[in-house]
Length: 210
Image 1 (spheres, rainbow, N blue to C red):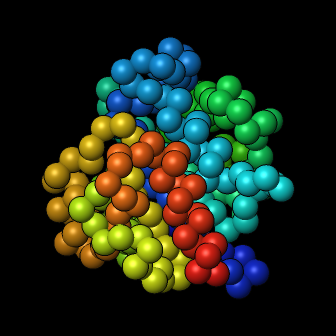
Image 2: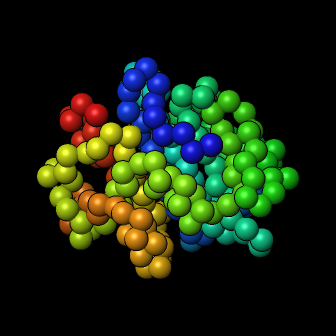
């Protein structure tokens, strides 16, 4: 589940987006688009994480943590190396895949992992459990306006990038990440959408040949 290294000897790029208000209920997904929960942010971020003009990137995986749950959070894992495909890269196409994944993964139990379809898994745990596992295997970068300028950072191999949606990451979560080791990086003074952050990170990694 927590595979980091990419195929063909290439580095894996891993993104974790924490969706603080996003529901685990499939019937709520489209209702949260354009609302205070802003579920559309997830679709836009996935599109920009995986797609470029000539196709889909290899060696990219994205974990989407859905925090809004009556019992325990869920995490959706998307991996381009495991046969991931969407019927399109527009918002509705991606959201329909999410709805299908949440529907098929409704019986996932706490702390378990359930394969849904090629390139997609649902995990019965949330942010803290996920990060404890990932940080054991990957150099971790937290998007933070007070971090080091991204253009001054030489990224390590198999980098892990952590960001939140439209809501700030809880301070206690940041402290937990810091205890396990991370580098805070900044993309500039302006607050950007999560989907824009992913594009800029990809660009910097591409330019460094990572």
